[in-house]
Length: 325
Image (cartoon, rainbow, N blue to C red):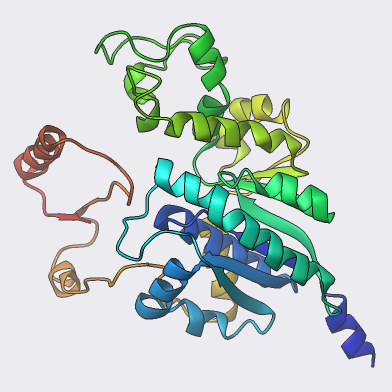
């Protein structure tokens, strides 16, 4: 009877990522890390990403060793053949399609008898989560995937506009940005996120949606950042002056690898939404240790043809073997 009672009282956390690869992967790592701490975890994905994980990754077999880990999925409102990225279409779909479905599922999970959800960890771009969790009466923690510096730039977008440093008036990418506290002496236009590099506020409204989502962070019970104080302490402190609590938990990947190593020998894992090409492994095995340059810009980076060619020429001219993902 005591064991049954303990099972019913296990804290239950719902984890809700923004539905693109670069956000799903760290949220899965966070979920797996928490699952080692006797928590019940529900991971809420989009149907599209859930099916791709099922087809291309080892996520489901890996999490089978965690009996209190469960997957749920809802629609993201986009056609299956639509490319998913952090753009206006995806942000709009989250707010109009995923928000009511999230509310419906959360209401059900909060009402269940055994281990009802008492906390939601949502991606920081899911700005609608704060109103829904407050209405239902569940604590909300936001998890922002990029660095503290990136978050701080997003927070300061209103200052950039007010100081007329944004949008850009010319194409001088070396122009210094002076209206972001703590970054006045080194930040340039080229250092800003891609969605901030616009010349007309009407040409791309992604920055507006991301800025508004960032401002909502102050309404959550806490903010999680995948960084650590020794790396970004001053920036974290500035963020902390606007949020209830800020927790730095990075590097998350290293924490997870350590927890895994305590239970099992080192094995390769995958959270990929795409089929992985393993044809390079034989080639890599033939190369000396630490001799190969690995190049990866992530799944949503936008580069011009000229930029790609510049990188390619640099890699070729280096005379070193390289693997471009």
